[in-house]
Length: 146
Image (cartoon, rainbow, N blue to C red; front, side, top):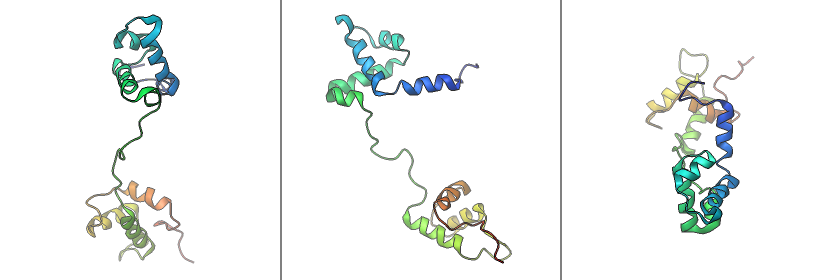
């Protein structure tokens, strides 16, 4: 295994560490045997980062046990959506209409470029167009008529 890359097994183990029982283990280690342990000692014993230990302990102090054991819900999406409802409607209408002159059908990149040209969005990828169209019955690559 190269440094900087983790094996799939290691990644799965790390994912389990994010659970409720792991956060409970952090709190138990912090209070075990009445000893005052540092974040580094707890992290070494459990195989996590000292920052994780500190975050769990801070949530416990500020919000009690439930706050420490459960993950905090996100305040906002990690990434803003490229297309809002009106933009999605424009995309669907565009994809279901005739393709540009000289083209037999719409391609995902043509649709993306057209959305930018029409100033629906400042920039959008063909893959975002694909994911948006995937949830609809309209397909730019639909079967040929006849």
